[in-house]
Amino acid sequence: MIKQAPKGIEKFSFIKPPRIAIVVSRFNQTVTNGLCQGAQEWLAEHQIPFQHKDLFYASGAFELPLIAKKLAQSGKYDGVVCLGCIIKGDTAHFEFISLGATIGLMQASLATEVPISFGVLTTYTAEQAQMRSEENKENKGREAVAACIESLDLLQKI
Image (cartoon, rainbow, N blue to C red; front, side, top):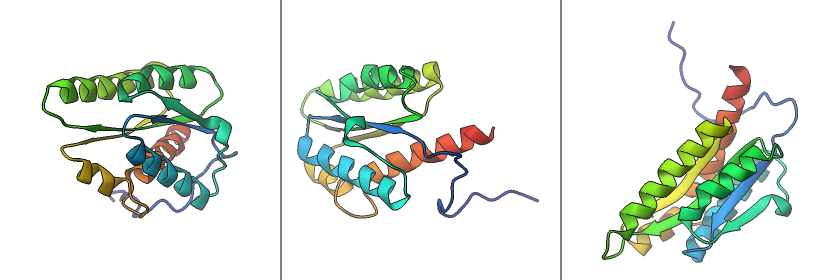
């Protein structure tokens, strides 16, 4: 029999609630604030405590990997959620920042063996970014924190 993936995250098997750090890029702050709000709402809906002292701000998406790695290495956090927004402009800057943030966060997670989720929007327009950070179930901050928690749950079962 083939094991099917769950349709929704209903219940976690945590002995104690996980402690999550959220790191938010200040660049494109209107969008990143929306992502952060979505992530915190998802945690509250799933009865996972979150304290303001576990919220950190990076100047931009490029700075997220180092901050995430340090938080993961601290031993204080079970997972780290990184939220940012990179909007394509007229130069190659978008490609370099997007690639650096993506690879940096992946390397930080692999090096620390702590789930670090990628909630960095990489959009072509400001409108696309705004749509993905609105206060609804499609908010990508919600998705990023859900991915982190689901990864934590699975890692504890392995």
